[in-house]
Image (cartoon, rainbow, N blue to C red; front, side, top):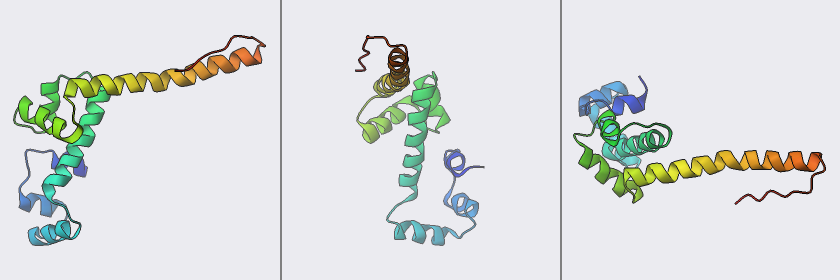
Length: 128
């Protein structure tokens, strides 16, 4: 099981987290403290990473994403995303997909422009 999936399980206990990493609970706490972090901060990082991917590449409902990431309800999920990114899930999805579409369109426009040059065409293609 990948660490990200483990962290997203039904909120593992301190003992389960430490056991997964083959260490004592106190050792895990000391190591996290030495790195200047806490378990919740790591969990938030994993969740945010997965949220970005799920909102960008899937059509899952917001409530389904919240459930997949072990949130108790839709509202705490929306609050967390707003805290991490400053936007609502629907806004993130729109912006990410718009950027994704532009990235896919630019190479296509460059290919068209290169074909025009090879064919001796005088047309110009503007990429905005």
